[in-house]
Amino acid sequence: QLQLVESGGGLVQPGGSLRLSCAASGFTLDRYAMGWFRQAPGKEREGVSCISESGGITKYADSVKGRFTISRDNEKNTVYLQMNSLKPEDTAIYFCAADSSVFRICVSRSAGSWGQGTQVTVSS
Image 1 (spheres, rainbow, N blue to C red):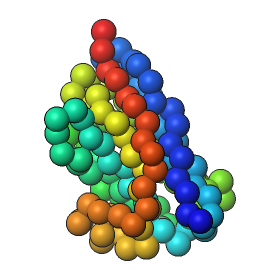
Image 2: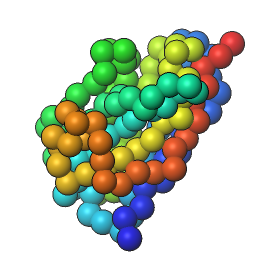
Image 3: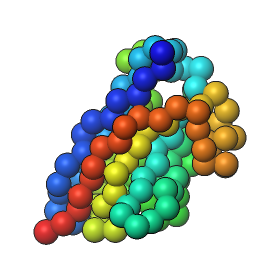
Image 4: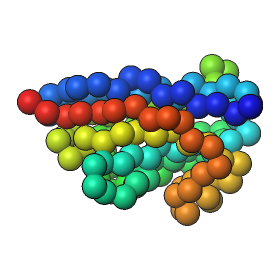
């Protein structure tokens, strides 16, 4: 059974950094495109970043370009989101997602499998 488990969230001051991890089990990661999404209270879920199966294609929301970096280690079955220069508006629950279609994750911003999410709070 495909399972995704996020970790690395927490409370950080504005300007700080966090690295989120998404550990996958029950499937071979290199066959799936992966994405990070987030949902803030009272707001709709938004796509933050995505990465193709091999890592050759990455995409970012305009709001995080230049600050966030997505990467993957297929041997470790793990996807990462390095978040730098964090802002209060980055506060949200961050979800990891997997799909066999890079188009679905990166363009349609939907996915077949989701993790439970990890809370990121940016506050002084």
